[in-house]
Length: 348
Ligand code: GYE
Image 1 (cartoon, rainbow, N blue to C red):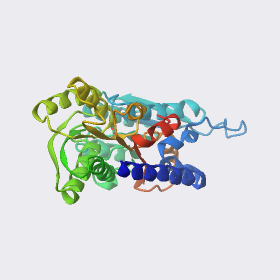
Image 2: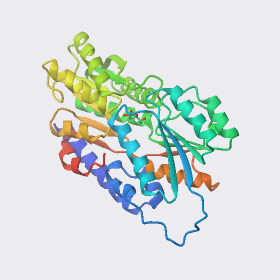
Image 3: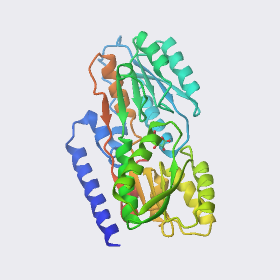
Image 4: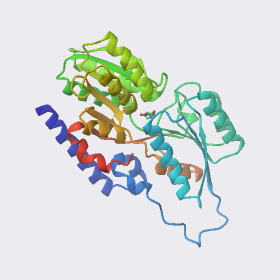
């Protein structure tokens, strides 16, 4: 109990520090620097461009190859991008492709953006490998690529920048939170994200390494992919529970899978949040509701509201300005103790 209390103070302090940081930070990078819960401002409609603006100035044309609709997090990101475009039709044109979870569809979309000669291509790579050729084609056509929210395993010269979180750090933080929740010992299971996705590979590496290095009495007895979806999170958790009846915790690489796992735990006649604790990543509304209901324990935030920063970065690239190779999001950690206090301020 004491530990939980301390962790809630830590969370509250982090939130306070982030809010303070938000207020004093420079406006453009603030979208990524601020915790998602406090950046609604970045999504607010901007003032219309003045009528005097050069009527002949070209719009920024951006193609974005989205992964699909696997999670609440993904939907929030899509909404952030589309809302920004809809609110800036005077300066921005968005060509949006939903690849329905398939790399081949993302590659087709990129090729079509190249044919249409867009100014900048944005991509959330469903998996890390297999991009060299199509990225080289974009480079030959003089079109910069922005990697949004997931990284690609290619030479750095093939893309302009990566905008997103540090998944290894998220995994390490999740491990610390899990250890605290279960008192440093016990058997736990891990629900992995999409096989080959940077967000899954790194969240696993960070978590597993932190446990192995610092918590010898915690054993990860099973680890399997649930593809970042609620349905598969539930399905995999059902089989975990059958073969490992004595587990005390579940770590899920995203909240949607944790929400699926919570359903499975309940159907097995156990109490999620008590008999089996949950730690997951993202910070979507659904996990806050579960925490308020006492059925989930902790989420490590990962900001999906990247639309404004994405377009601002694309505009810089079009103007030939330099951008950092990694624009890192700074995210918070939320435990059930403070969920009720912050749930209304959550923007996604
Ligand atoms: O955590 C998960 C989504 O790439 C960071 O993808 C993103 C991850 C996010 O499906 O919910």
